[in-house]
Image 1 (tube, chains in turn purple, orange, brown):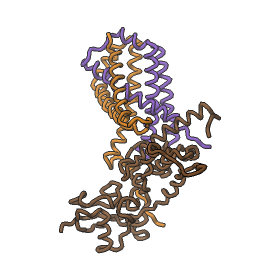
Image 2: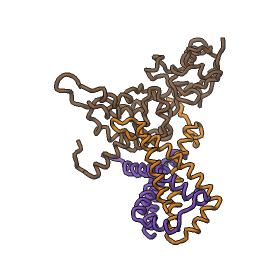
Image 3: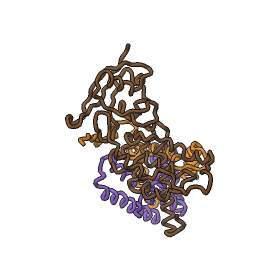
Image 4: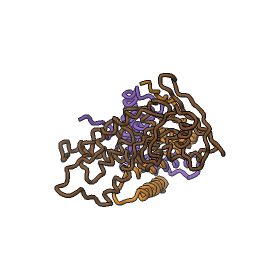
Length: 115
Length: 121
Length: 244
């Protein structure tokens, strides 16, 4: 029987959506607004170095990056299909979106491992 | 039969407020991707010992504006995501509002936990 | 007596290349639904107007129309709620228009039986099927569907992708999947879990807003996605496992 490959990407989309909803607002608020604007005294560099070198941090950040990128890929794919009526380019759009997520995940792993 | 087929405009989501909110909700994913890029730049700056440069860069006007917009979209994502979650996740013998409250509690606890770990001196 | 203007879409096949709008003044009575206004037009002003209706009490599901841009049952939407008017009455969106306010529903009629909306079960050895109130609560909400197609009219995915199985059909599949007497979930899976089935839905949620019976098709579809994803993972991990 013909089964759709959608369950796998949908699970990655859902996992990424959950991870992004739970973790991104606080991280973006701290590192994107509160520290640059001086609302909160930023932590010392030694503390941040120690933090990102911790294996649990690396694992969590990798999960967040990879799942977040698949969340983006899946949702953006459908936004292009429906929002701009581009369903006729479905194969190309899917290849570009999920391809970007795969490349981005590999890049995240390289960045996190090289810290 | 000469039935008339109704035309769908390209920007059909401008016709109705709820459709526009849907498209904005879906576009939040772009800002999730932006956050991943920003996070990886931050991590590599910390690793290279150029965190001070990153901080100076992140204080630039356009980066701040981008991050304000991104945060707004991420909050839209979080609120809509939690609102829809109880309808997909039906837990036996647990009313939907409990599932909703559990998501918000998890959000609060995890946000506080992340802030604590980052700000711990 | 006060009146209200009804702007009704007219389309005469073979004569009009596209629909036009015709305005009628009808009495504004507090007990009159949009459908009563249309009946007044048909009986007293213009006998050529075509539209579908039957029960006038929100159960036959045949009088769905687009009123002021929203898909509604015209028997359950009152003229006074649109006062001072005008009230714009159009055919249901996303369906081909046969004449005036009458749309071609054959696509929906073809899709409905694909989800096998009946009990797939061996008859009990003796007596009848027994079910507790709790077991009935599992699917009762989804059994309230009256096939009025307002959800299809509200759904942008169906508008853009006519192959999409659609909200009501998937919710109806779930109505039987969640029934304790039914064992047909595996039989329905090919259709419900196809690319044109639940996976095509992007959870706009407008089907549930439009539903006059509180079925929540959007919720039913998401719930099914989770079930189907878990089932697909089980197949992946146990390829020839304990599947029926």
